[in-house]
Length: 374
Image (tube, rainbow, N blue to C red):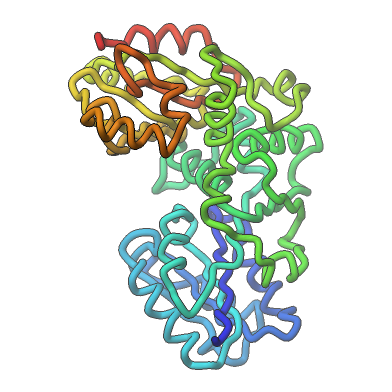
């Protein structure tokens, strides 16, 4: 069977240094024949020309611009087709995709995983140390004219959470004390992530290409919120606690902490929706299962990054299924029986909350005030 062509996905907010890093890779390919796909959502694809010029690529046919859309939404199918054509041409043995700065990495990775002739080898997130300081360490936020501060924070969180390699670029522009706080935030959002700290995009090519470091399920499950919920479920704790991740001194010094909000009563939908307008700015990230009092059958996934809040269908509560189905599922997964409540079954609110300088007692009290009757 012919070997699958490896692919690296490069993500990062505008100005983080993705193009600089890409140029360095193109200038030092170490024997690889790399095709590059760039996605700039502007009408003029500036990135493609910069890469061609800066990387001194004589064969510009290896640079494929995808414009007038974003590859995490409208251009996903076009991206997959373009990559398949590049691979089938036989000219290249590696594909690099530079996503637009406003792209969320997970939807792109999901699309790349469908390409049968290629394999997603590495998802590289590039963050600007100075911007991380601005967004998460106080001070005036750097605003793009087309984006609000909360949108930037949301993108940064998702790009940190969903990658197999994280490059903290522009380290020379911040102090060591500021870097400590950046590390603390990242360690809480994505504990154990492979981090490379650098300036001017100086990263060894072998850390980017052919690393065999990406596994979709492992990357998804390694996010901080997921780790905390797993720990809480294993320990059976029903009280606020700090998460493992950054060291205790970092958490104490910088006020970065995590707790699980767990209740066996539902939220009142109207109260919850009203509270979204007052969602605490000290919460960086939250995600988990939600039970609403006007829907006893279905669970929801509630997810917040900064002030961006989304909720989606997560599946049917087992308690709403026939007894026979309940017994079958409990045999498959004994943990369901451990979490079973005689009155409400498996219905619950289990929400991991990650934040900075949070008033956890007030947040808990506020959320309790949103509860309805079972």
